[in-house]
Length: 319
Ligand code: UDP
Ligand code: MG
Image 1 (cartoon, rainbow, N blue to C red):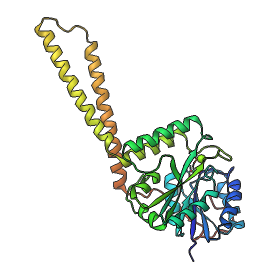
Image 2 (image 1 turned 120 degrees about the horizontal axis):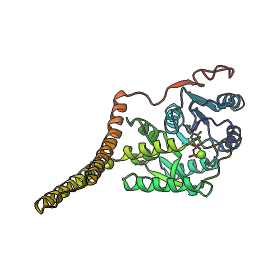
Image 3 (image 1 turned 45 degrees about the vertical axis):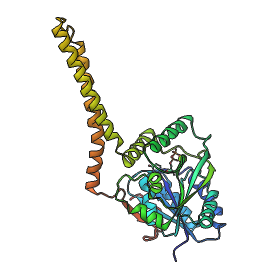
Image 4 (image 1 turned 60 degrees about the vertical axis):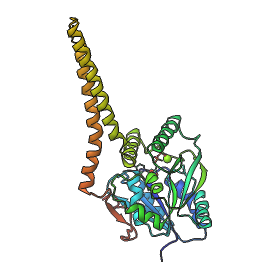
């Protein structure tokens, strides 16, 4: 019998917060009067996360452990968990207790009551995030909105989805799928539930600047070709400038004022060089993605799934 609800939790080196997370999540799920599974996706952790998960699993039979062979990143880990979940409803939630587990019950209620396929968790209060995180996040959602991405501001990856929605999302062929943009794009009926973003309960953020930049780049190139058009605009600007410089040089020649310094030449060379590099860079971004898509490599490899390969101890978990 498949459970009604699957709770998918991507986690990377979360040994500090895991026991707290389980302690808070379990009463919520047990109190919901529904069958459930907790799909813990260990995103290639190198700390004690695997061992702690095995311990938790012995005490809490609804826990499933899916371990990825290497760190595939938050988005890929979530996709991995969703692809292996058995529930009719699926919730994705962070392991660090920034998304309050209590909201899951509310999400399922709203979905059933309003007959919607997706319930977005929307952060109404981000005061616990750092100022840097808040400003960059705000910029992110604004830019995405301008580029034509649908979806609510401040709706990240705490969301409930029906199986139909998840199947549709997973059927998308794109490689660097950003779920918070892909799900609204599909346009399934949806509702929102507001929640207060809490502070991380323990441990440190697993989203360094490099991962934030990757997410931003994946998001922009995933929703829009506008950056490619930007290259064309820059090229147009370059041609106009070149023409003006030519006119200026001709007038100087005819009026007998020969161009003296080579500085202006150098400036022009450097300027155009920069434009060309910029255009090449933007093109490269898309060409790179075409290449990755052509290779059609899976975004993650499953090391094991505790449902299929029951393990008895924790000694071999790192293999
Ligand atoms: N995470 C993951 N793989 C990664 C980075 C993060 O599975 O490569 C998980 C992490 O363990 C957490 C969630 O993604 O459950 C969100 O990460 P985090 O809380 O560190 O991000 P922040 O809240 O700082 O943006
Ligand atoms: Mg967090």
